[in-house]
Image (tube, rainbow, N blue to C red):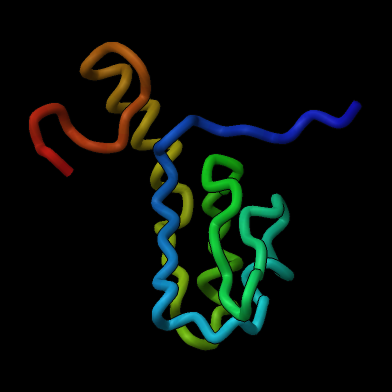
Length: 97
């Protein structure tokens, strides 16, 4: 049985602007972890926490509908979790973002 590769939950910086998406499917084609699927002529994020923030999706999206800060989420999550205790998180405690 093949196990899915997982990173930290809820730390990835990946975002998809569905309004800009034209459904070309490049994000799904280049993503090494199957994060995207194309349904009804639009991409959607199917497995956000499988994203490794490589940036291939954003670099290959002709509509600039995908954004990701390559490598930021996992590192930030680990560091902030260590600094402030508890589970890895993306935002500073009390920042509300």
